[in-house]
Image (cartoon, rainbow, N blue to C red; front, side, top):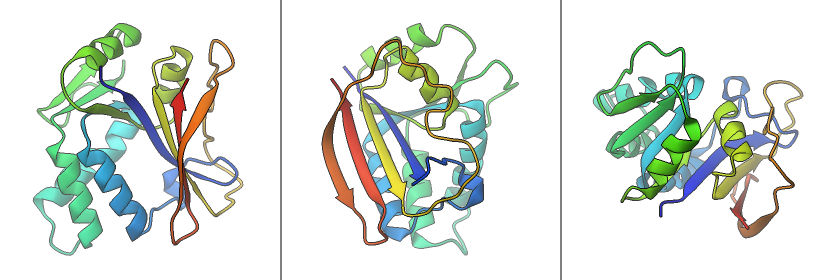
Length: 187
């Protein structure tokens, strides 16, 4: 069965808002590029989907003037076979390989997990909080950046697991920038 992996960057004070300066450096981009190459499905809510698409596909189509790291990530992003967006308000998908799920999140994710293929990657804040409540996230990859932001959306905002969620630390890694990857497995 496929794993559902939640990956996100956060400041030391738990801010996950990428619009206020949580931008990965080259080494972190390389880490995320490798992670994206290891999955074949993205699972997003509408907001995260609209941040990622068409931004990354556009860079893959027109790489001139972009950094090597951006181009590598954009190409890895483009190689994923399927994007599933959970939304009741998204009118249409920007990409052919995108499917919109409007109801029954739990059943849809369980079906995805049982399909053949590589793992599933979920990002954002709202959708992962819902998936946590349903007990569907198998692995958490949280990169803590060495900054304090003081504002913005917080990690696990609105999350309310049905019971205390006990995780097992599977890996920790410190990047040259001082960012720390914490990889936890659901027990």
